[in-house]
Length: 99
Ligand code: FES
Image (cartoon, rainbow, N blue to C red; front, side):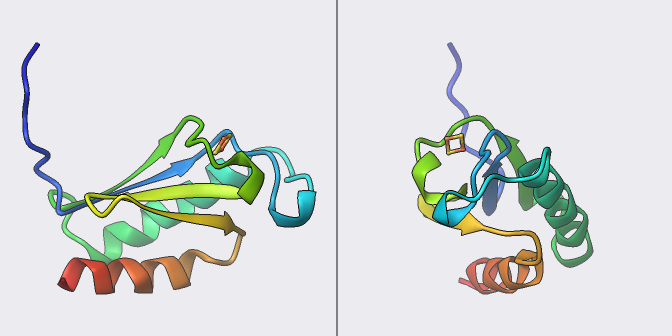
């Protein structure tokens, strides 16, 4: 086994397996994956690829809270994501990137 330190300043994972939004509303198929893809496309316009990554993930253990995500190295969850939250998430990531 080899140990390496992450080269990314921000590494944001969106669970692509979430199937419910908040209030137990069922997501249309691929909602979480599509949200993550749009977010990744937007992130490429705002951040250097070498420093910020947006990836899909498997279950983050937050299923009951809607579409879930987590930002590293902070280790902070954002849950209850909905299509249309992308701009708000990019603004938040910009603030995190500055810090
Ligand atoms: S399936 Fe997405 S957090 Fe569990």
